[in-house]
View 1 (cartoon, rainbow, N blue to C red):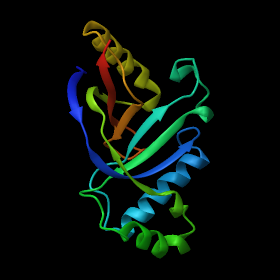
View 2 (view 1 turned 60 degrees about the vertical axis):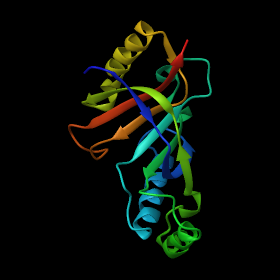
View 3 (view 1 turned 90 degrees about the vertical axis):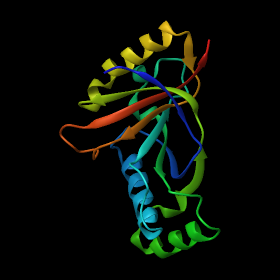
Amino acid sequence: MTPQLTTYGPVTCLNVTGMGAPGGAEHVSAIRALYTVAGAMGGPAGPMEGLWWVEDDRPGLEVPRELWRWHLLLPLPAVPEPGVLERAREATRPSGAAVDRVVVRTVTEGECVEVLHAGPFSEEHVSLKVMEEFMAERGLVVNGPHHEVYLTALDDPEPRTLLRQPVRGA
């Protein structure tokens, strides 16, 4: 588990924004909406991703999970043609998924520190600590929300998650 510096973006994605605990009703509803609309558009280009932050002075992992804020993302191969998203929403509205919450968003983070975390989400704090030490050694500070790329299904017993943190010089 060795962090590395990378550059990320711009990437066009389907996006749903929300607040609440991972795996909670709001989060599950957002995932369903993303995949429902993506399916009607021909499917996502990459794995689901999440941008996570808190609006609190405490470190993120000390904030109750129901107060966590997020953007869930599904990368697209290109910017959709005008009207494609609207037609996909209309076609999938009968599904009951919250399809009107899905928007197209372009994400550009620039320089980032990232590391592959292999193991349960509850152990991510270990990988995050390694990333923090890597940043401190190089005089880097946080420059945007914490970013996760889910390389396996969220219910996989041995999950793999790419942890990414946008950074800038201190």
